[in-house]
Every structure is written in C-alpha cells, then in structure tokens.
Amino acid sequence: MTNKIETSWGKEQRKLALCRKLVVSQRYSSQEEIRHQMMRSGYKGISQSTVSRLLKMLGVMKVQNAKGKKVYSLNALHHPAPDINEPLSAMLIDVEHNDKFVLIHMNSGYAKAMARIIDLCAWPTVLGVIASSNVVWIAPRDTRDVAQLHQRLLNLLESNAGL
Image 1 (tube, rainbow, N blue to C red):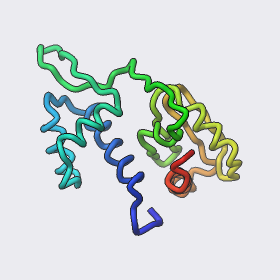
Image 2: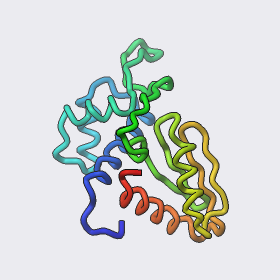
Image 3: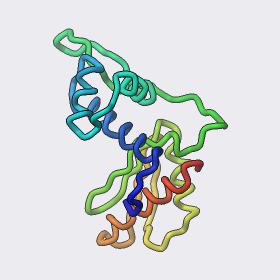
C-alpha cells in the first residue's frame, strides 16, 4: 500500500478475504479453528464474534462432508440482498493478481457494476475488463504493468469506499 496508515475499510477487506480463502481451502468444523488460523496469519486480537460476522458476510454455512463431519463451506446460493444505502465497495471480497491479470472477487451479482466503474475510469493501461456474476477480470495492456494496475485498483477502492 502507498499509505503507511491502513484504513479500517482496508483492514476489514483483508480480514474478509483471508476468511474466505481459509473456508475455501480448508475444512474447519468450528469458528474457533478459523479464529486460530487467522491469528496465525497476523490477526492477533481477532475475536470469535468477528469471525462469526465475517462468516455471515460471506454467506458461509455448515455442510456435512463425505465423512459425515459438519464443516464450514461457502454457500453457492448466497446472494446478499441489494441495499441502496450500501456502497458497491461493501460487496468486495478480494483483489488479487498474478503476472498476467488482476481479479476482483465480489459478492454474487455485483461484479458487472464494478467492471462498469473500471471501464469508466478509461485507464490507458487497461486492455480489457470482463465480468461474470462475482468476478471481474482485468487484463493490462502490458503484463509488465500488472502489479502497478493491481495497486491502482486497490487505491481506487480504498479512496472511494463509497463507490
């Protein structure tokens, strides 16, 4: 980040992204297990109630796995009800990149609106933007600029948390 002082919105988005990644990549049967893993990842003071709130925001539910154990899983049918008072940025889950492109993960149904905002920015470094229901794919004009584009998107999202 270019700012030394991280915004509370940015911190919240990073917690949400980490929680999402944990639920997708592991099989946790309790919020306490998730809390401990988040603490190991740098969130030393995270509470169980914060984990509970993050899980609710992500639409996580408990499902029975093949071994009959109840584990947390993302609910593919989770579609937050649109709220005109909530900014589009509140539907953001994660922004990531590799050496070729940038992905923005949104709650289902919100990616196309986010893609439109990026299109309206008309950045010359963006070759194209494609959106599904929950992912925005951004291709840089030159792949050497992908990290810079990723940072520019993070700055846009943090400076305009009311998008």
